[in-house]
Image (cartoon, rainbow, N blue to C red; front, side, top):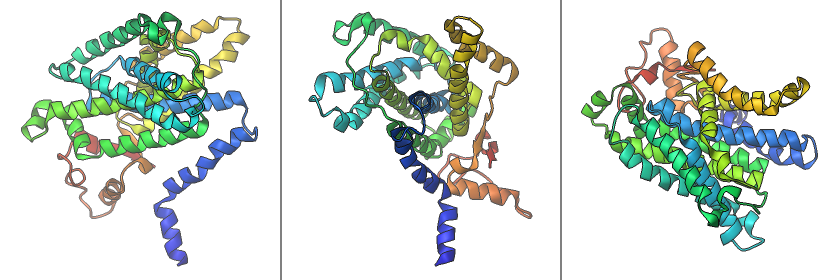
Length: 359
């Protein structure tokens, strides 16, 4: 019995750690163990992790280049906020908050579907142009719709985003993304990234796979937007410009393309650096607006010095499916020639099969 318990703990240690940490997200701010500023920074890190995972699905795993993810975040933020401000009965906001989050995600997913169909009729860099235009259309549209506040923005949003909600959605986003990446469609996406023509020849429906991943990515961005809106309690179109999309790009390429662990690291490091710059710039008597120049500068340096980022094409072992981890271990053992291909149900070996597992 004792051995079985130890084996159970060993086998499920990561979910157990995450489950044990969940009450801390409620208790730490509740009893003042962390101050409100640190709690706010942790929330921003969580929201940025969701956004980075979302964008990494397209730019990292799919190999396309999207630069307008702030548009999907904006749609999710406005849709979620409108549900709690205009539609839900007063007083039921906290109860119906999960519905508002899902509403924001679904609205962004529908927008992603509308963009994906025409975008993936073409090949090459056209997706970057289309998504850039989409971001500008969303911002301009919101500025010219009085019902959502126009350029003044939407006010009166209740503060419903809490640390436990952010923590929960970070876990959900990572688990969903991992399952998608290592599913049949996910392996198809990796095959398309390496060689689209060859992937189609072995039966991958490129358009369908791309559209599914794009819609899922937009859905996650919408969830992050709804969390963002209910944290700030005020949103306006200027919060979702190309500069916001640039921040997401920096977090993806800083952490590493095609890596969920890299997305977590990139979002955490970037958010922490920006927050650390506040007192530093104040101490140097430099305007805080210079923080806005940091993201583009980061992006230039990354492209020059480390295009793959911290963990490009590498992954933490605990983020890999159990079957995949066993294959890695077997391939390293003596007398084992290594796996001949990807896990069962995949489209076959791809370059991602060379992805290193980081303990």
